[in-house]
Image (cartoon, rainbow, N blue to C red; front, side):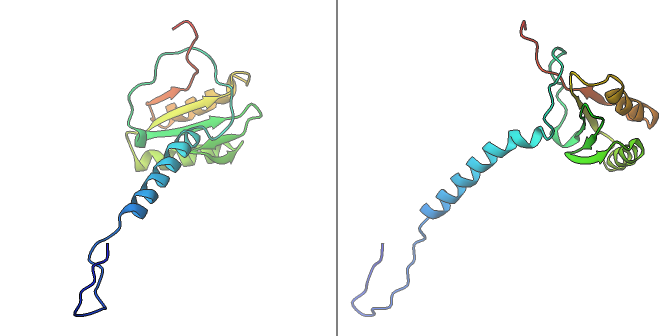
Length: 141
């Protein structure tokens, strides 16, 4: 509220209106709530059914490695193509940055078994022992 003095007509406003700030905070919160699930799944895949519940790895330690049925590899949502050497060098670079890294492998249920096994073999060959395979929960659990 403005308060005017009889002495001076140019009185400064000494209160801050926080309503626009709260509106902005709520809009940003809604945007983050909507976009967070979209960031986890970058490639549209039909995951196999089964498996145990996910282990409690820190989200900052998880590196997502995905493979489409046509053999295209993705690491952290970025395309690597079908070049396994490029995938290996990027995985090693991530592992050097974070030795606690967990490689989460997402592969299509209808794809070749060989494609996700290439990622597992790259991990084993380079001493990356922490990896898991993403699955859909089974209906009978």
